[in-house]
Amino acid sequence: MNKSILIIEDEEGLRMTLSDRLRSEGYVVDLAADGLDGLKKATSLTFDLIVLDIMLPHRSGVDVCRDIRSAGLATPILLLTARSQISDKVVGLKFGADDYVTKPFDTLELMARVEALLRRRQPYSPHRVIELGPLRMDVTGTEVTVDGKEV
Image (cartoon, rainbow, N blue to C red; front, top):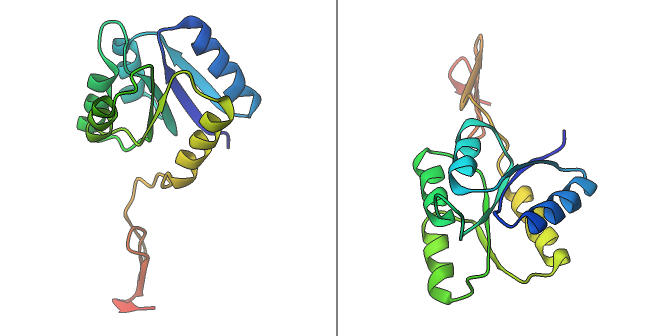
């Protein structure tokens, strides 16, 4: 199954370039051009990764990042921005971003960071404990019991 990526970026040229590159690598890509549309998509649809610009119209990327985390979503977020000050990076990471890439960037580095974030993503499991008759499996703790006895 192809991984899905949401790109929230207001610069149309960059948005199209990134989406073309990611699609050529086999990813399913959705796009948003401002913070409000991006937040709506991020919280109502399922993505494996969000690439998020900080300087966006209608809602900043930092606010979008914070609101995604406040909604309880653990989707990896890669901030992509022209802001390169250490304080900007620290704020972005403290508000829930998983990585931070400054513009201009090297496409090979960006793709490597995308792949790294996707590798670390935990598979989604709506059930933490699966029970089938006497068999009980705790997916998060990898504990398996039969009739209450650990296997």
